Length: 294
Image (cartoon, rainbow, N blue to C red; front, side, top):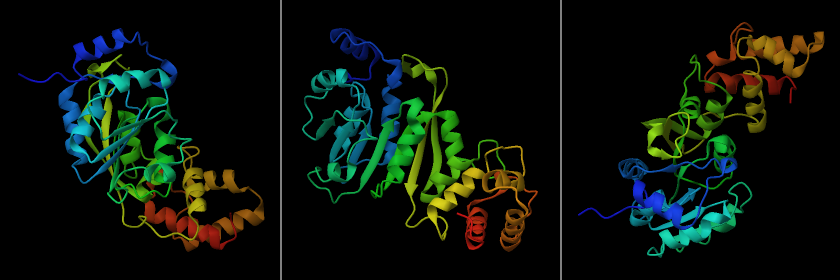
């Protein structure tokens, strides 16, 4: 006989009813009720007893249960204090789980990761991210300077496509560049909307991101590199020239410097931002930097 799981639909319903829990739209709560998918997430993340896990938004503990059975330790951040007694109930048998009632964006993660019994183990981030705040959370974690070895996160399919997109595709944009600068990103599998309670309006995807040993390209100034890549996508249908003059100005003096920079970067002013890869953006931002743009 199969053991009942928190994610089993009947168990999820019973837990929610027992605690009188109602979903809060502002927290983007969609709980997963398919144990096969939870197992696939753990397999994709390659979680074993030599890995510490940070989970964001454990909900009622459906994924946490699977993580705790496989990982050395799980630290889960839950913003909704109404879920604290529920998690204390559903995960009571696990001694290797710590639930923290904090907003991950405001948490002092450097201090928190020292709380793992063995902080030397590699740390992976595994999460079913709330839709409305996927990008800020990911960028916050990637830029935190904490050496997460890997992220396996569920998000809206459209956002996963944007992060893993390649140049010249519809989804490619500044988010693709921001993430791929630090990580390799690949959609592992698609999750249909029907396996959530309540069901969202769109399908989800599991995205696997692995940190590179060093950033994908070397640049003179990282914040400026991101500024230039972001500016290049401001108006998607416009040329690089249009977007750069919108960002830096349209005076004759600026235009002359822009021409020099584009020439040095070996780029045509008529190209569109979405045609440039990381290498080309690095050349562009360094050339602009050399011409005194900031």
